[in-house]
Image (cartoon, rainbow, N blue to C red; front, side, top):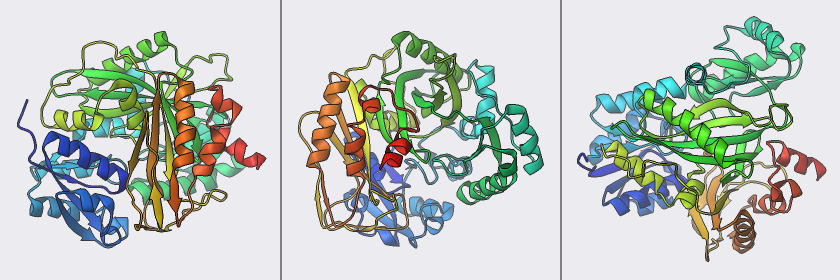
Length: 453
């Protein structure tokens, strides 16, 4: 293997920054935390070996600032930057700046990010490698073009940002009369969120399942599919609960998809972690068909469920690959060990879902057999209003799905967060829903639950 990094700067915050610090510490690598003025007392700042303030609270002036982060890396003498997820993690221009400054970007190559990170380009790649697609388009030129293509595909359709994710720049359109206004709304949000106004259209599936596959490649011509995660429990395109393996997936289908995905990654020279996302329409006549949506060229929020059922440290593997190492995985289909579930705990109102920043007066995370908590806060920490509301992830593992669910219910009952509101109550309700217990959930399950009151 090439020489391991001496010092990694983490261009992120919250629980994922803490997660990366832990992986680096086990690898014997020093860490540099960057933080905004709002995050001076954040947990990742307290745990890192060094910390550098990179600007005001607004993300555009701190966590999204190329110059601030590169300057911090140069001042601290970091030889690599780990972007985590969100912020600059899928920004190929930032990765290119890192490369030109002689700093390793811990992620895919710039070329791979541009090839797979752009949603329209990724759809074109999917065609080449035999990954099935829903009817859709390339980049739309204007609202008139959007109307013509929507008529061709047939309503309902969904507008999606070409250069982003996380639900931003997405608009469902059900009638011709709405297409122009929704096109302008989607392009405006895409430009604001990703500095790229391009959008495209895709046929909208009313009650799909959302299933994604984890991939890991190295610089030596190796790539492994590490199976799938079920991510159907979502609200406004934001995942709430994830699990591995999917209750829907059969071993033969997993192996088939794994072969297709590994071929695509090998032939495009993909290195590092990535996730290919698919939709399944359970109401369609082809109810067993997975349709490729997009690829996230980064570490996922929900990576712990894959770690729990494979026994791998994906963040450590990601760092080792970036340093020039070979995959430590065996050359075979990786077998799952039991079942894992993750609940995202957000600082938000449990009824309106509005963010709920403020002082955490008491914090007692759950523990015990089969329970893991990836958190980024502590008692006495003030949750700022400038960033994502995620404060912790609870992950449970068991020999069966039922055991993992039982442990999750127990863990949520133990979780104490005082001073702010959280969505723990929503998770408890979801874990009593027949559709969830029976593994029949779709991306509409939470919406339907909330509508019932």
